[in-house]
Amino acid sequence: MSDDGLKKIISHAKEYGFVFPSSEIYDGLSAAYDYGQLGSELKNNIKQYWWTAMVRMNENIVGIDAAIFMHPTTWKASGHVDAFNDPLIDNKDSKKRYRADVLIEEHIAKIEAKIQKDVDKAAARFGDAFDEAQFRSTNPQVLRRQSEIDDINARFKAAMDADDLASVKALIEDLGITCPISGSKNWTDVRQFNLMFKTELGAVSGDSGVVYLRPETAQGIFVNYLNVQKSGRMKLPFGIAQIGKAFRNEIIARQFIFRMREFEQMEMQFFIKPGTQEEWYNHWKDARIQWHKALGLGDENYRFHDHVKLAHYADAACDIEFNFPMGFKELEGIHSRTDFDLKQHEEYSSKKLRYFDPETNESYVPYVLETSIGLDRMFLAVLSSALREETLEDGSERTVMAIPFALAPVKAAVLPLIKKDGLPEKAREVLAQLQLHHIVQYDEKDAIGRRYRRQDAIGTPLCITVDHDTLNDDAVTVRNRDTMQQERIAIADLNAYVDGLVSMTSLFQA
Ligand code: GAP
Image 1 (cartoon, helix red, strand yellow):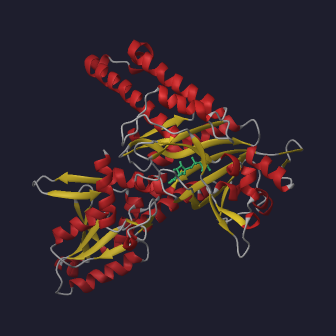
Image 2: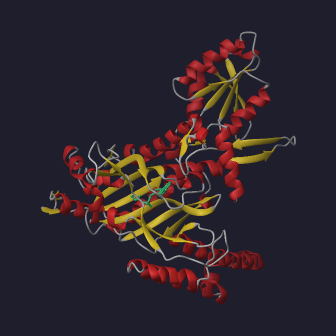
C-alpha cells in the first residue's frame, strides 16, 4: 500500500467512527486525534490482548497505573532533560523542518530498496534454484550497496556519539540529500531540540514549579520498582507492566496516528539478575513477535531491525517493524536497558533501589529488559492490514475490515429479516442474551444485504439473522464476515458458538 492507501484508511476511519481529527470543529489540532465509538472499542481490545499476554499469562508480571506528572528530578535522572533530543535541520528554501536522522534513514531505505530490486530480479531469473543468502553475500553490486549503507551508518553513529552535529550536516551534504519539497540542498546547521512538554504545577511559576508531561511510561515503573517489589514480595526475575499516555513535542508529527504528540504506550520493564540480559533479550524478542504473529496480520509484515545508534540507556536494542502503508516502520521497541535507570534514580533520590538475592546473599541493582509498544501504532497496523476492497463472485464489490475477530469492536450484529411479524421482538431477545458477553449491535433498517455491507465495513465478524423460521425452531442464521458462509445455530447454543469464534482465548492457543 502507498500514501494513497493511508489516505483511504484515514477517510474510512473517520467515516465509520474509528478516528477523528481532534477538535475538528475548530479545524483540528496538528498530530492530535480522537478515537471514536468504534476506535475506542478496538483500542480497548488491543490493550486487553496485551495486558492478558503480559500480566495475566505471566505469574511474575504485575501491572500498575502511575501518574502522568512525576517529580521533575525523575527526568533529570533518566537523562531526558539533557539527552531526549532530536537533531533537526531546516531547508532554507522550503522553510520546512526535518529530523536529520530521518533524512539519513530515508536515504538508506532507498539504497535498501535498490538491493531488494536486485534480489527480486535474480530470484525471477534463477527460479527455484535461487539462494538469496548466497546472492546477497556474493553479488558485487549488492555488496557495494551494502557497504555504502554500512559506511553511512558508521559515520552517523560516530557523529551522534560524539555529539558532533556539524558532521551530521556534512553527512547530509555528502549524500546529496535534497529537500522533498524544494528539491534544494540549501540546509541550515543541525540543532538539538528537546522533545518534552513543560508545564507548571499549581500556582508556582518559574523553574521551581516546572513539571513535564511524561515522554514515556517507563519511568513511572522505575520509580515504583521498590514499592512493587516489597509490597508484592516479588522475586527476580519479575516484570512491571503499564499502559498509559505519553507526550512528545515531535518535530515532524505526521502520517496519521503513526507519530503523534499525545499517544499511548504499553510498556513492560522486566527486572533481572545482571549477566542474564542476553538470554532475556532473546526471550522477549521471541515472546513479542509471537504475540504479533498470533493475530494473523501476515508473518511477512513483520521484521526485526537492530539499532545502530543505541539510546543512552541501552546495551542492545531492536525494533519490531511492521509493513505500514508507508513501508516498514517501527511498531515496538525491545531494549536491554542495563541498570542505567535504577542506578540513576538511586543517585538522584539517594534511596537504595537494590534487590537482596536470597540465593547468593548479595544485594544488587537489577538489570532491566524493556518491551515498549505504541498502542496507536498497533491500532494503525491492525486497521491498515484489515481494510480491503473485494470483488465477490457475483461481480459486486464490498469494503471489508478484516480485523482479527478477537479485536473487532463489534462482535456481532443481530438483524431481524423484516421489521414486523414479531421478528424485531425475537431479535431483541437474542441481542439481550449476547450483550451480557460482547458488544453487539441491533440493526433493522434497509435490506439485509445492505446491513451485511455496513457490518463488513466496520469489521463485525458475525451477522445473526432472525427470520420467520426462528419463531418455530428457535435457531438463527449466522453469517461469517470472512467466508460469507451461513450456518444455522440454535439460540440455546449461540453464546458458546459466538464465544468460540470471537474470544481472545483463541489467540493464545495458536
Ligand atoms: N520506554 C522506551 C520508549 O519510549 P521509544 O522507542 O521511544 O521507546 C516506544 O517508544 C514505542 O512508542 C515506539 O515503538 C512507538 O510504537 C511508540 N511511539 C513513540 N513515539 C511515538 C509517537 N510520537 N506517536 C505514536 N507512537 C509513538
